[in-house]
Length: 197
Image 1 (cartoon, rainbow, N blue to C red):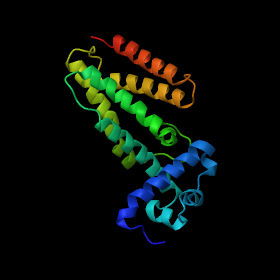
Image 2: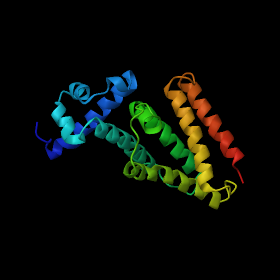
Image 3: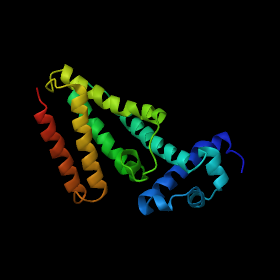
Image 4: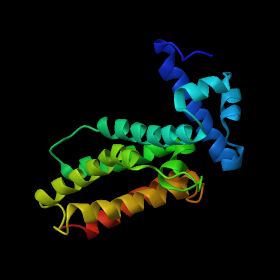
């Protein structure tokens, strides 16, 4: 199969990435192969090789796509005059993205495929998502909402809590939707109160 035509490229790429993510999430790394992903999307393994090179290339693109979707979710959050509201909105966008892309979430933040390790270039490409959180925390410090313990340190704490809650929520460990929402709101309210200036 020849390389997909320009107008087909993004659609096929996305379908292959999502198929790979669903297989990995549902059946584990042993089930993930270029042949299986091709079958799931009704295309050939040649198309997978053309787009990604090999299975390692597919995993790398699945990883990066997860962060591209997160970056787009962050970019959709409007910036207002209320830095705390903006920060909480970023948290909500993070959670919404995790729930919309559960099949990519574990690859983004875990090690479901032990041999997959993002290279330096991939790590550099995903850094802006964390930088957006640091910047939002910095605004809270600058405007006296949070005590100045360092924007990076605050971002690490918030990121760790958001990741933990999302991971548990995706596994159904926080109860039904109403319970999970309540846990999310209470946890952020408690942490932001503790960070207050």
